[in-house]
Amino acid sequence: MKITHYLILAGIVPAHAALLSDFDGGGGAFTDAAFRQGPIGSVVEGGPTGSYYNLLNNQGSTGNQIAFAATGTAGWQTASLTMDVRGDQISADGFGVAFVDIATYGNDIANGTAEEERAKFNNSVGVGFRTFNGTNATVNYNGVESPDASYSLPAGEWVPVTIDLTRDGDGALISASVAGESVFTDFALAGAPDDFRIQIGGRTGGAAMVLDIDNVNLTTRRCP
Image (cartoon, rainbow, N blue to C red):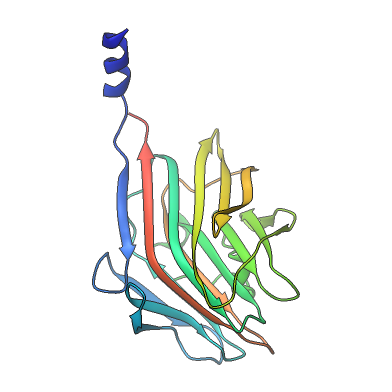
């Protein structure tokens, strides 16, 4: 039994953990852009664990994206994205996390659909966390969205956000949680990119909000 157990362990490929950014100098490169009238996001000093990134700064008509450098995800079997998020003065419109297909978009920052909080990109997986008229989330592949699922975003508090992907044939099973509470569990997606990078977007319209992110990490595992 022990010999069999060791043989099984020998066939497991170790997980690849990558700190995308802690905004204190740790992690890889990132690029950011503003696609509407509001100001671009910025790194802010003085957070609870050092600097953080202010994606939305409580101004209307803002549409911002921050994209992280590729980490070599081709051939992934599981992927887990974790980060800390803080929302305040929450009115509109929300934020989204995208697993952007590198074959489609390359490594340049991509401007998706007109709603950054839905994280819709071609041939890509997105999770959208809307904050207008309540807090509702969706997942999507190639722009095809799931039904809404409610979640809670406590104002003014740093909370963990986790998104997990598991390969399932040509598609993937996706789970997500906010502040330790499940939002989606093993929702089946019709497809998923083989090689992706992480991009986070936020938007406001006539109303506004504050949205900060920190400690963005991506862990992937491949089959042997």
